[in-house]
Length: 246
Image (cartoon, rainbow, N blue to C red; front, side, top):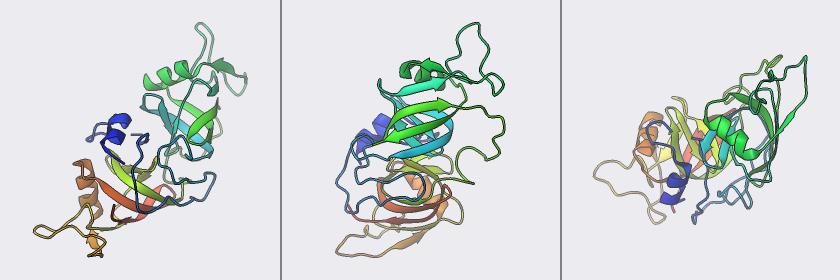
């Protein structure tokens, strides 16, 4: 991806998100692979045509104009997205929020829902995504929810390729997929990040890898290094990050 990606995401390097989305495409040497779980990966990292499809559940957070994120999966919101809310967002003025004892839904415009999420409303929802775009957002009550929302236990698993971008401390994003990086993450770099001082970056003519500490890799990504990598994610946490040449 290019500088356009970081501009569209509009997430400060120091604080990160969403989170993570992409509308700019770049010519990468390795295609995206299909992740396991409820989503199906795509070769186009842009998030619209050929974007991720699947059903995702959890707390919805604001990422950028027209883009939200749920359970580490970024998605676009359009005027055609159907939103059924009332438990948290889009509660009619003067009426109580819906509950399990008083179930139902208030139809809500996508613009209104996005605006309330941006303003900090905590919304738990099931999101049906097709080609990177939400077709249905349906809120549900937090009552009876035992699984932590958002990223470690029950997080997304799969293999993703593309430009890695800093999202927040300890969290990066690649091809619209946010993931955590930990001290156990193995990083093999040298094409873009973690180039030893005084040595040239690796190339296809001079292949190989430099093992890199996760904290060093994250620091360089936060500083703006453009890194193309294949990331193996298990339950929302990267177990392996391997750079490749552009």
